[in-house]
Image 1 (cartoon, one colour):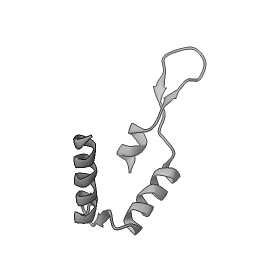
Image 2 (tube, helix red, strand yellow):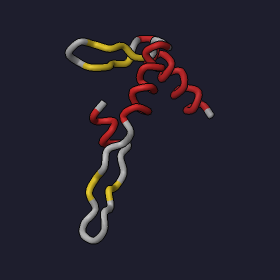
Image 3 (tube, one colour):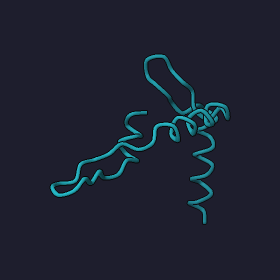
Length: 70
């Protein structure tokens, strides 16, 4: 989840000087991941974190195929 917070974060600008990075909202990302878990599209692993389930992989493959065909 930390990687997603860093990726979707923005810039933190406080007056003069250089910009620094700011992290994104953790609650929004956490709720989105929980919804994906409830839809059985991702699985929560003990050591590996969250991974895409076979149903999620199938959905991604079908969506990519449809987009590719258009």
